[in-house]
Image (tube, rainbow, N blue to C red; front, top):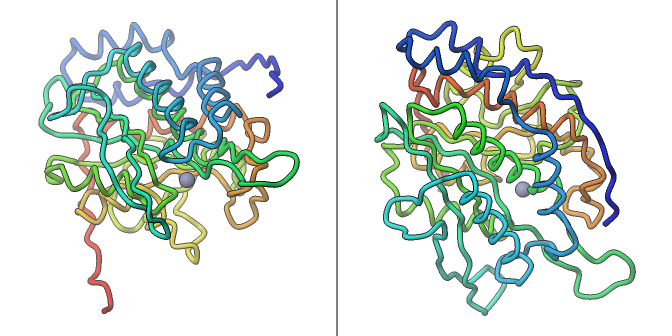
Length: 336
Ligand SMILES: [Zn+2]
């Protein structure tokens, strides 16, 4: 893959400073935050590195059960280690390994969710999960030319966000515990996140922040994203309030016919009552690269992805620091 050198000047406006001013938290914390407010922001050089690595041909489309996804798993593990995350309860590494048999297949697959933790300072028994899926569709069995489904937007962009937010919150601190998860086998039917959901006490999870396809220019214009299931809890309203004055806006998911709330990993936790939603920037109704081999890193806008990650950091800061707790999701009974 061709490398392009881009220098991005990223506005440092989306830091935790505004939220901290409004905060009634102890002065100790605000002192620390003030000193770091201009030093730390989401680093666009690191964002580009994560994205281009995860979406490279070397990862062979990251299909669960293949050598390609194993390379992605190792990259994420190494980043979690470098950043300084701890392991999730009951696990002795970042891997939550399990076996499953995909639909339309007879072969059992062994794969792993990659999970890292930043323990909260004052509310460590209350969890916020930040997630994205690191698997994608793999490679075409035959054909000429490009046969690799790089999945740059879907969902190397989201995993990039998870890694960047882990690094960000490690630096600025967090009152609630943050669980960072890169889920496997989303493309095979939300299998990794469903497995994760079976092993948790959902009552401990106060919010779920899932990132999907955050690298393309949104149809609402620059500095916007949309949120799935906006009306299902007040999570989105909290984020909107936190973003006031930042120049970045969050909208309810406009693609209602696509049923997107149930088509990504946020659904696995929402089914357990967790206010768990997906952020995206992509106009999925017209996106030419969705689930195509053309979903390459070069088609993404580095400014969009970086600003969106910054906005997620700022927009969810009051939830991560325990000042806001979104209402639980209640799903209507399914029609039998
Ligand atoms: Zn996806």
